[in-house]
Length: 209
Image (tube, rainbow, N blue to C red; front, top):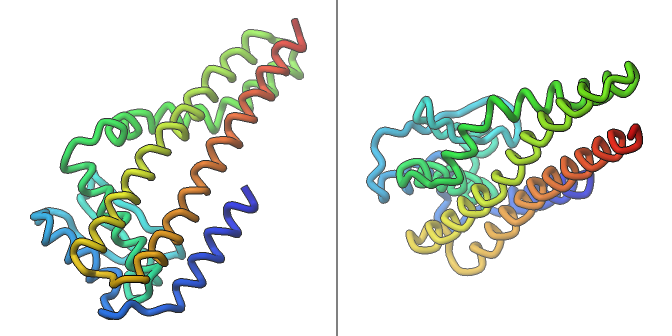
């Protein structure tokens, strides 16, 4: 997890210092992609924080962090295009994205209360409580696993769009790919970490048998 976070931050900062040849800001990149794809009902907004970029399907808004919204760097172009990739998934009814959205309540519940129930059941010597915690946390793990194809697909769409629309030129596309690949590793690391946590909880449960 630490390596993945350091890798994405280092890659982001490296390409945040390299301006694209067209000089388009992240906001301009997002609006250009949406316009070219015929999407007119999605807003592009600035949001506070760093690397807080996301697409909110309920509000129909691509929200870009201030450093991405106003920057003309390769990192800004890549991240803005990635969020537009999620917009296109929403427009096309991408199944994994819809499935992930439906799992949000269960995933939040599982990540918050699953570990508490496992540990509580262990110290109180209540096997049933441990098992409930494992089931809840398994839902959180499934959410992280389903997130992988959603994020990889959005990045694939983004790279194709910036190249096909001429937003990035030549070698600039390699920089965008590096940024999105680094970001993808954070999702992989999160899923692996959650999987190891679930394994730990299962070992705890079996150790009581």
